[in-house]
Length: 442
Image (cartoon, rainbow, N blue to C red; front, side, top):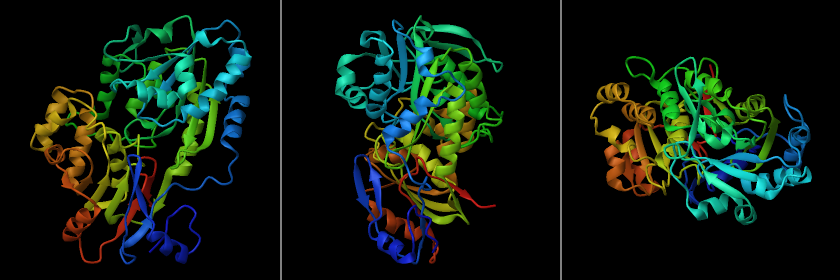
């Protein structure tokens, strides 16, 4: 047994931890116990060393902008601002980060009534008032103007096309007389390489046709195979990222503040300044922190998504499932914890699973690509390659329609898994699969 566990110092401590393994599930923790003889390791992000306080990290980033003039030379009294921020599916610690940023803006003479927060919902649905209040904090929610981008209904402006032919439509507020600031977190993304940064513009505040055209490049090959360069941690040769980059270059973003969080949602890094340059430096930290090297895959992987909002719906939870698959042997068994309090996450996602075979789904996706078709295809491929046991609040019928083995609890999932595995099976546990990216050593 090899303990890949951040903070473990010796086997005795690791064995003690076995009795305390817990998997985040929504806002709860579910304890599990794995026999020592099977457990190969608990995979968690690498420690980042001694940290300054979160406030110091943010302040340092603002004082040392990357490939940009300082905020003080960009924003002046009388300016009107649009601050683009993530929606409820992306934890970015806005309630902590925004007051620091606003404090600086007000010192520069910007008035509260001249600041508008624009939620970058992308193709996601609208949020409730309570959800927006939670993200912003009561003071900001009550004091400042805020709007949600709706890719179907928000007024957009056309900026041109990318060389791949994507028509670039963005929310008209982004092309108004206001200066544009972007605040976000940076994470791995299962087909765009990384989330955050330029994705705050496309798909974040883009029109539906822009998002649809861009996401289609995940399955651009004629036979419907997912593009080999569309994978977590990869930007080079990634057609989705390259297309986003061209689209974003048509938008004048004046300044950005981007953070990296650990599995406890603590801010461990911050990067300010130019949207792309700051993003790329943040990606380096994400890769260093969240890529966990393992000697070989395991027969069984048990994965959580890291709790809410990472398991708010199945489409978001798939990112953790995708990461966990990097640690799973072919024909292995995956036990996934995903609360899915908001259900599947798309009105059209389930329809893809009415195609009985992977081949038929591929043909349908290529013939009539719709948003999340690539995610459905990626999930269908995994269901062909392994047994996936799902512990979720999703309706049992929905889980079975997709192809999961629906289970009520971990004890039931464990017993079902044992019947599918060899006698001396090996196990990895990944409590936060949304940020932990296993990589087999070559």
